[in-house]
Length: 434
Image (cartoon, rainbow, N blue to C red):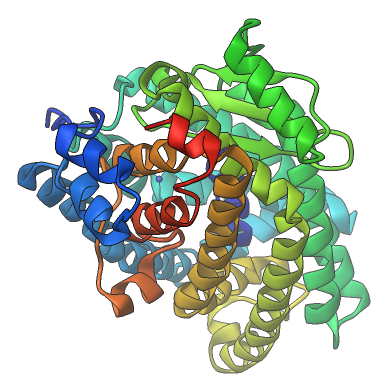
């Protein structure tokens, strides 16, 4: 969902030619193995993995492992931005300007928020250019030229300015009213805001970046809607969006809540995936809806946010006592202290990376199982996992997967699909697929 609405407004306001992956159908030997009553899930998994050329595996491993370092560099860059805004007293000057413009506290917060969001966007632009444009082109994953990429960044900035200003105005009103317990009330505000954003995103945010249109009537569309009805997904249409103008990545989602639910797939999935892959992927996405992962995620990440705000509360008080006078910060209710609040929350989320990834990875694994049982396309699911190998490491070590993976690894997903297939190999519909 547009990178989870820009990673929930950038963590509460704290981005060479492609190597083709062989995704052809399994060869005759593999087909014979799958037709054998003594179907071997391990052998079938190895057969699928053998479709990935060593150079393609090395390339995707390098891309994904490079992302580990970017987590660190993003955190260090955030530290540098906060130091610049605080150490040079630029944040104080932005607050003073807002106070000269108006005497109303909420308007002062809004004027400061605009200055802060624009400043942070400009200060992080070099890293954003590398992460979101140069690196994506280096690994052959982007279809955008720099002008179109920059245009999307401008749209993201506009969304940040609107949503971020509203969030900060409400947040600082809460801080001013509850100066001692602001961290608990502030976490509640963040959660309510997250629910609102998730609700409106499919209708008002994601269409800013891509054109969504109903999928033309076809047998595939009828099968997708039948799958949705059979599993209680309240969608009466399937939408296609033109992600190929930005990226080569295949994706789909069942997004929204409180009446805004919609099934969407990008044109990369539609054009590159087989019917079996598409049904397997959408079965997985419907699993998120049926298993209430949006609500469960809000609860679990809500606990993380509460802990994060408690950490920020302690960290801010300690830092303000030591350096507050030097930075020109009057207290936690002073908007000039926002860079400190943001960087403390960023540090907390950096440490919580394995926890956050485990929460997400667990829900993804549940959706995988649901999708297999609903769509009954184990080979389609395995083929989709091969496609995702273009930018995901397929076979990490257990510690590596625990810390860095927010989805099960490609090998785990293929193996799970083959285990499922082994248990259903004599079912009429599975046997008919062989």
